[in-house]
Length: 360
Image: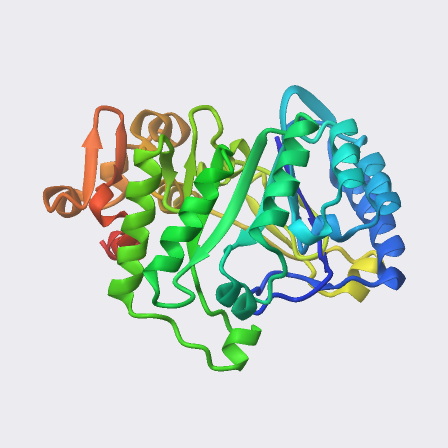
């Protein structure tokens, strides 16, 4: 089993972010951590946990004492010996004392929300750090035996591809094993949306995507999911479970669980959560929805969906459930031994391809 824990607090609100978050507020945190523990104790059934992922928000915005309390809550779980334990952090809130606390509590993976090293882009995104600060944090992590490090980067904020090239060069100079690269999406009700910020030209964005892909692959990174690249052995165990449509617990404000064929969504209202009302919606997914999700999520991966695993799970052949022969004929989908996957040259346009897949 896998566990996601949501910490919604942030020191500042990024202009592009539509995740469930609120500004750091001492008046909420004590009650929030108490209810987080209550929720976990009331819902967790004692399974062995293979991965814990603490996301946000900005988990590293918590103080040392608040983080210590969070780690005490996590001791509730029965954790596998070969676990992955990830915490999302921002550079400006991750000091050496927190890093030492992470190491003490067996955190073995850090995901840093860097987004860019370019000052213009950072200002647009309302991020606050420099390359030097990122480098210092990464050196401190490595010095404390946390070497499994991911950086998030956002491209397409401006139409200047030279910024993207320099960002990738900066990333490569840091010598870390994982990077997640996302094109800027202007979500409703974000600061960028309110300010009527516009996306760049699609062709320019595609050129950036291909540059990133080619540069990282030629530098020894494996492109294993649309937006994710890793050195051998450093793919995200936790996220792969999502893309395999596996089960997981979600605890905390706005989190989602997938258990026993139910998609369970927690409230995004901090006052409701802190009063003990955790779940806002619970929806059963029938077999066809589950099969569709297996395909839609699985086709995000470069190696796609295992035909035999699909059959063993549902006792049905993929090609009998979904009308994909035309997609295979047009070489939009590829069948290679036991795997069915999106042709790599069409991966960037996977959303359009998946729409066609669902219509068929």
